[in-house]
Length: 502
Image 1 (cartoon, rainbow, N blue to C red):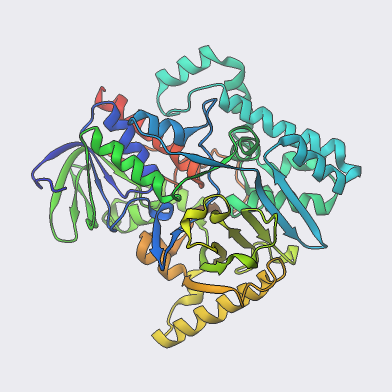
Image 2: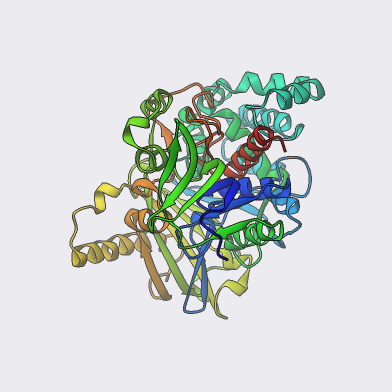
């Protein structure tokens, strides 16, 4: 679809990641005229997809929260409903199968009592502490699940919610400055069990429990048993595709191959954007779904960096990116009873190191149609910093990709014997790949604290110090994860709708 560059929009959204698309669709559902600008060929960002040799690969992870059918934390379900669309989903009976040091094997079952029972059987001396810790996570979740999740920057919303749910609000205020590690240590003493709590956090926050906000953990550790992990039929890319379908149905527009060069500022106010081909679009509100580093260091003049952003960048740093292997394998590689998601770590001391923890998603165990008959997809990835991949010649870069891929596959042979022999297709992505295709500075997964902070209190909301400019996505409250960025999208759309008088 084309639009006139002279057209004026209620809102312009830079990037079609899930945070940006949720913002756009929620505004469009309220009658706003929205333009989404996407530099790539398809929407979704790290929630996109690509197809090779009959395989339909998810760009990012396949562990999806937010598709429940009850409560208020089912944000992806609600986002789709707002634009009159939906996706068929497939429930996953186990969130993660952990393969950890000292032969610690554990499955996080969808049924809460099954999970707590299995963990307590491994640590019988900590049975009471396990129950108390995870029950406290439920208290956080129940507070969140009692109220509609919208912008915490909007006073009238806050007043309404407080009068409707005073106890839930007070409960959340109590947990806002707290991190998981402090609460876990109140109830648990066993050092190995505390390490397990660390990797429970690390698998989605990329930091250990000491640095992970309790609010986020309460959502993740409980919603996996409440709404559950539900995989979208047809692949994760269907989420963005359906949101775009709903966006256009509501009369708004998305343009592909439209890379934004800069945000236009007049009289210290964001008023539009300019593309790399010099086309300009103007809007009442500009929303950046880029990282805050991209937004304030690339899309705006250097002299416009607000003091609040300088302070934020001193508190937070870019997380590592990932090396990703997208594998097509013969079905015989997977033993009967294999679960969809796995985490492999052989040494606790290497959990946070580059190439230390290996993540695995096998979405074809839930949706076989994503691969040719008799085959499965294994998407495996491990943290990696972009500095490891700089300054390499074309041949050295490809050789390093093959070397790292071989090491990962050899480690995975411990849980999937015969994996190497069963390979049918292999594609390797690096931090450079993520930087190139996702337009994320250094390919980063998002912000992580540089030091221990007070829970979520350091995370910025959607409005910025530049009038007319908003940010959305994992660089804003409440942080990383598909359901988290969906929440940031709901919050951003609500704040803008109020500002526009919708």
